Image (cartoon, rainbow, N blue to C red; front, side):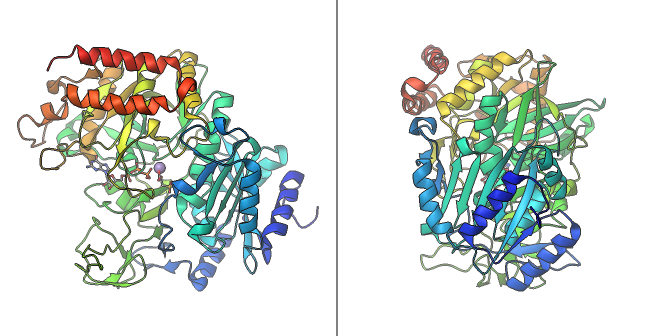
Length: 598
Ligand code: GTP
Ligand code: SPV
Ligand code: MN
């Protein structure tokens, strides 16, 4: 096959087949070179897809605006297309593969006419690592290419790998007309294929991210006995130089990025901790020959939430996004720099908002609601190597050993600040029953509580009952399973104010978690798990009103009994498929609660 930079017949045949369907004007293979990236940036500026920001203040940075109705993941347009409906499970939208291909084919037909189709070979995980998986994304969006270059290892090194190996995920994307009525995010786990059409929003179109690294990967991981999870990975270095690694699953926009790169607060400085960021969104984990769980971050960049990011809440991120960053849906200031609600600096007197309109502070829309400069789900894409706390083990093919797995939700009530599961099986129950309030990261009613098991509800590529079974089985494969915890940074007082200061102060809770892992501290046994004795949390330097920590650690019997009703309903949806171990845990918790004090 002449004219192709690969001899991989499967890849060439597929590229030809798709080009016949989408009818692009030309095809460009992404080689991963700086030169090609610069060309793409220039072309994007000319076409209006990107705006070049102030290069003195923000070198290598660009701004992109999406369509107004294309600003977050559209879960209702996201489908798992397995032959049997049962295999997608009750929590996924399902379509038969035949129907899905047909529906999407009609939208893809001729969708790239007059456009270039880019072929992006990419590796999730270090090229050649036993953890890694290869994908090839075909797209007609330069924005997608430039984001993928930040988020994954792309180009010739991956193509070379494909000379030896036919195993890759076929990822097809076209923005088509960016029409929400012709938008579909389709996953075909049985064909190792993803088709996404009609969107230009990150989570829908950077197909290496949620689509491959979670939905397809979770399906593959179950077969291959490993785990693909919506988790940050971080290292906590103690003064003696020993680094302990943890992984944490919080739902979208619930604090993974912030936790993964925190800087120790003043009050704990004397203890000399240092944080190393391995990843902020996705963790692939395998049981190694030592019987413990090892993790890699398959990505090479952050696609992080902008609003609220400032040098107080997240100084490492502020440093990270000063160069080579693509900003999406933020406000443009007159000096060609950017701003968002909760960013550093004064509120600008004027600017261009995320929709491209002139903006001034205190403007109101037709219903009297404030007009935001940046969209609540405005994001930045930045290389992890920009981050001052980037781990020195990012390229290690075996990843890092995980001592603790932490689940966490956004709950105004019910969940205490932290508790520990009694054992692995109870930990799976704790993860499986997670609840969280909806955020701007997905289309839906913000604030509403929904069950979001392991923060994977929108990302599990198969029946969640089988996923729970897989978690239970993984515990049996490990001689030294990580200890399991649950945290909640979002509990509020009677006036709706957060009780816990959060952000860097969360290290105080991680300290207790590590002490538990290393058997250094006792705990209080409660119906829901082990809770800290308040005096075991180091609050040095925190001006917390008397009794606040006690409020944060309170287990309210009535609230938990109410919570169990929601869990019962949720588990009931899986009918016979739900592993009975989870019902055993449910009954045990109900029993302990009934006997519990007040
Ligand atoms: P995805 O990228 O969507 O998967 O989200 P994420 O889990 O990485 O969320 P991120 O760290 O970006 O946090 C998003 C929101 O949570 C922001 O509005 C933060 O300000 C807020 N947040 C993060 N950590 C804390 C915390 O400890 N306390 C409080 N109150 N808010 C927090
Ligand atoms: C999330 O929504 O969990 C994200 C952003 O991390 S996206 O990649 O859009 O899914
Ligand atoms: Mn995420």
